[in-house]
Length: 145
Image (cartoon, rainbow, N blue to C red):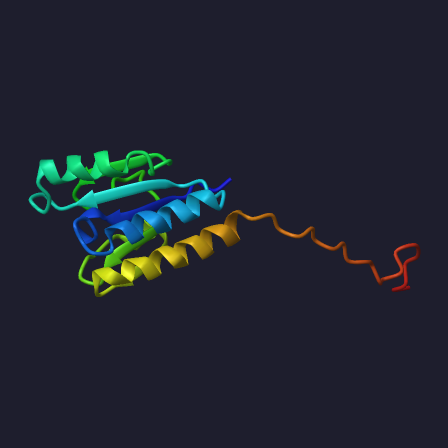
């Protein structure tokens, strides 16, 4: 089973006009039986503790999945991100990221979450059984003689 971790910059959508849309997209993925972990990060000084606390209190009932919030975008040695949503200006060590969506404007986070939903749904849905190929080399005899 694949451990799906979605990582986003919290400062890019908190207190914006599309903050509610981001939470709705995350909720849609959860309701579509996609089990994932949410990893939110922000740079030191981007958010005040009161803003972060208000955000958590506002959406705690709708964040049904394990959510981790940390300061800084640095990935540790054992960290592996399945789907990373980052600004074009951010740099990241991509050998620890499976899929990456880069955007230039914060509003494009909604598009990124739609792509995440499609990708996660495809990767976690049941696959059709493989057909067994019939042998055509006349296995009952040695036809090379």
